[in-house]
Length: 450
Ligand code: SF4
Image (cartoon, rainbow, N blue to C red):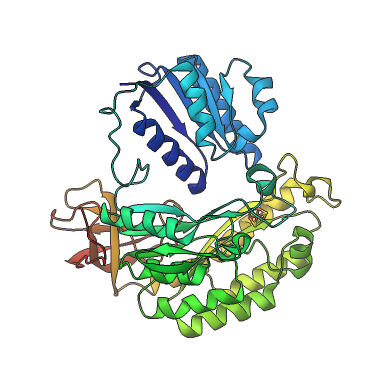
């Protein structure tokens, strides 16, 4: 064995995928990954640097690892700002940027040279996963070509670099063959996938597939698993995917980060669109797939947002009736262009608008949830409940970690990872409850090892 490494993973699903890659490489080189600071010879901390609270959480995690172990390598988004880390924690061994597997491995090698034995590198075919076996994130591109005024991801993660479609599809195939039932497609802007590589084709199982969201997702849908799309910007070609949702090949779910509805605020944010175009797009999607669940996030209190602009956003939410809404009060991110904008909105006004938005949306969410009572819905089981026979899962309208859950009673035979039919008997604004009434047959179009 090469040595023992402790690992702390913070941040969003994209950072989680980076952690999985680093852990896979560590295992491939014979390192064992241990769950406590005491056992570890060195600790890797994968940080998040997106907003101020995330930076503080990351610096706190580094401090804890230093205190309990002493040998710490830092990677991830905050690693793109090494000066900030070294100023607070000068004793860290090395700092590397996001997705820098080679950089982390070089730092690990310096502290813990790898063992040459070929018998130590036993890695599962799907790599090391940090999610449960039944769902997996599939990162199709790194970085972002947009210049949203509140965001520093393009500075931290660079311009968009897409993976070849063949690479993505073979990874998906391996994951499904190893038991993944739900693939969650992620990128900073999934709709722009492949634009940086001229949508070039690559081989997957003897055919050529273009690096473009439509052919890629069509191939994923053919694998016969749940495929969920995140960070989809409402470009015209997204419409081509909606028929797949109507046919039941693709989950009728779209995570579309709209951020606002007032054209003036969106322009200041350096983002396209406005309530009118958002609504037209949403209507055209729902005409094809009426069951489509749309998730979106919004920023309240962006500099220059007037009461009128905020009213625009509330009106939009009232008309759009989105199934899932997340909202944040605007906060400065070190290095973001919007920090220098005039007309910053006072904190108490931001808070008050946030509360009003959430109250209005809760009513809409409750109406939508209540409409599900009495229906039988497919639910993927993530965990067991507190009482015997109870399970906790998600419908097709719920992504893990960010959307609602279903608490269902059962006879005790349902296992984590099963997809079951649940008769819905109760609803709150976010969550459902019900009773397991049957199993759903699981037949992926992939030769499984599971
Ligand atoms: S918020 Fe804008 S700039 Fe930041 S990652 Fe998303 S699309 Fe790119």
